[in-house]
Image 1 (cartoon, rainbow, N blue to C red):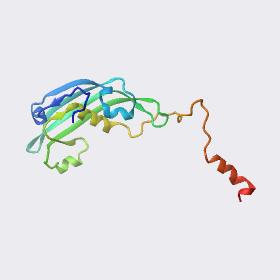
Image 2 (image 1 turned 180 degrees about the vertical axis):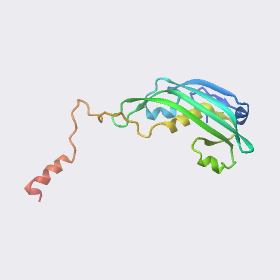
Image 3 (image 1 turned 90 degrees about the horizontal axis):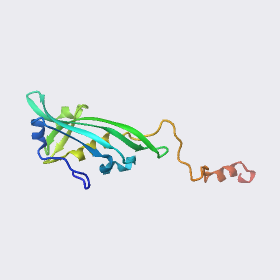
Image 4 (image 1 turned 90 degrees about the vertical axis):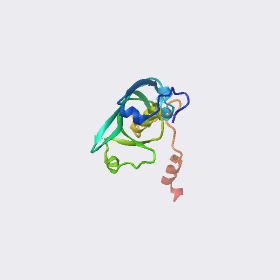
Length: 174
């Protein structure tokens, strides 16, 4: 899961991390989150993050959980005008760790407050952070009021169908 160019924060045993109720935190530059680049107008700034482990009582069992929080401001690309659109990131994800190959309990699939993630071996925290940010992004970010981009010089380009429209009204087009 590690990505080239990103200083990795790897948890070697995420289940132990959760059982010991440990936590880590840090800051990552937006420019280092390479998979976000297509959605951004600018890669300036940073994201503060924190990952906390816990064991939660689920009936007679204690289930390993992670809580990932992140904050920052991203400069998204407006889908209408293609300009920068400031967007405040306020991420708070609760994750249930499931060992690879184990079935995800049915009640976990119906619970919208917790997402089950399958973990095999190590957990790359920055890759997890990037995954969660990608899931939190708006589908089509747009300014409240903006215009579509215009050609160089500010003139609007005439539609290629305008000539056809003029033929429709002429007597020889019948």
